[in-house]
Amino acid sequence: MEQIIKHFTDTDLYKFSMCCAIIDNFPRAQVKYEFVDRNGLCYPKGFGKLVEEQIALLENLVITEEEIQFMRRKCYFLPGWFLTYLRGFRYKREWAKVSQDAEGHLHIEFEGLWADTVLLEVQVLAIVSELYYKVTGLDRKFDYEAYYHKSYAKAQKMLEHGCLWADFGPRRRVSFHAEDVALKAMLDATREHQETGKPGRCTGTSNVYLAMKYDVTPIGTMAHEYVSAIAAMYGPQMANHIAMSTWRHTYRGSLGTYLYDTYKWEAFDRNFSEDFARGFAGLRVDSGDNYEQFEKMKTKYASFGIPISEKQVVFSNALNIDGACELQDRLGHQAKISFGIGTCWTNDFDGVEPMNIVIKLLAAKITESWPFYNDTCKLSEDRGKATGRPEVVKRFKEILHIED
Image 1 (cartoon, one colour):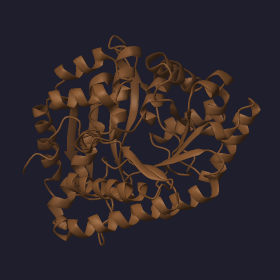
Image 2: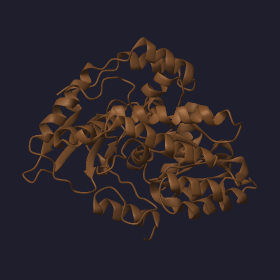
Image 3: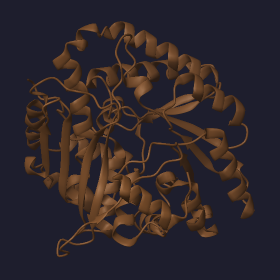
């Protein structure tokens, strides 16, 4: 089967921005990750072997001079030394172990230097998703011309409501081509809309390669794994504080939208002091009730004398078009809100079920010389969506005095 990931930068920007911060702050940290299929899907026989082959093909990827120059121009916050690092970066198949049990369940684990393995997640999720549709023959249902028109109509609706949004869709897309088609539709609709002078636009995409193809801004900051790894190394009580401090050390005010919900609002609230509130541009909502989370932010900022109207609020919690438009209508006058929407853009073919797959951090250690790893997990504002071993989730909740 042909190689699925064909471009080094066909991934989310936040993988590169995290990689840079990791090297800058935790250069010797080691980690373990685990693939989770939340639907417990049984994959076709031999699927694991195909995934293994696609991971091996990642070794062929080399960043091009065109990609380097684009990132130098658009990702001004990435230091020159990091782009030099990317020139020499090579994937290694031994970082990942893939197997499939008798029932067909897929098992994938990563282990190694955090600065290396951090770049695997999005590619492997995209491989699993696209490969599944190919192997099952569901890809024969994909009418990409109709998909363009469907995506264009969705973009028009968001533009009519004055929404600002970015494509966050690489991880669970049905194919690279689907993301490409959807993004083109968004940008075409935006160009036509801008002629009216009304607010609303597609601001770009998290996919660095497609951002380069269409000469738009790559969008992204960090993922939950950044806070989860710090929690493993130093404990969850101050994980958000250390994450914000190290992020600020690397980026000096750039990439200032903080993802706060790794250990729920309560733990973040204790760490979110006034200097962080003023120093970070805003917050990203990725779980829980969007309106309740917004009110918590509003109250917290007000306690520091900061109007929420001065802050950016990015909603990315499993959004669809209708949900984003409703949020815009109800909250758009109160703050600088925008949206990161993924699966709804890149996996929305009739009769095709989007996959519910993630790769989450299991454990970390601050240096290879430690003889042991410390377990970690991710909590959530959504009941039942904590990721990690049950005993670790229970222990973290007890440490943080969090009740369900």
